[in-house]
Image (cartoon, rainbow, N blue to C red; front, side, top):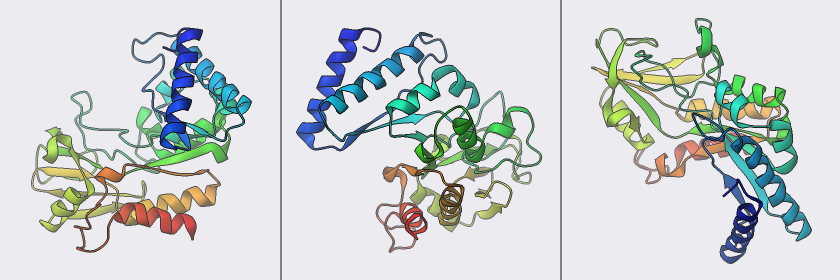
Length: 272
């Protein structure tokens, strides 16, 4: 679709018709990822053409539709997939996918948090770059205005199966994905904690993890999302993107009362 002028034109006008018909106020592009992992290297260029042409049509039509992009937080993908200065001219903001930095892998069979805000002093090589603060600063350094950068906060957890229940800190040996086939919703996290899991809040990365038997989980809680939200405000970034409402506690099961506790914590801190 993006590779031809005709394809882009058809998409843009069908998109605007869709936005009008269903009374949406904008569109978020979640292309994972242009020119990455064997994709057409020219997709990086075509993506910018699409965004610029969409912006032109919106302005010509005197409409106020928002245009945003969900974007990678990994340095290798960022430099391959995006022409950031040109992207910044065409969109209103980016939603930084600052989560799922690390999950169980046979190439790296050690426990790690998937959504740290900061690095740890012990982080080496690529691990040093796998955190939200570094990714946000890198996007700004590459040309995206700070006010157009939204930090992504996840409502899901990533899980590991520990090789030994007695070695359970960060960087503990793991033999595979843990409970939930490697992923839990926040209500499932609460169930795991209520079952007697040991909870640890890592002061370096500002995120918690927990373990019970052979199961180890990396997650966000109300404290960590509040800290991230406060950091975004203090640093002058544009705001927060939450991924996603479905995985938050939308029935209020964690405390038998509060619905969407993570989202509410973000909103409370952001609007304070």
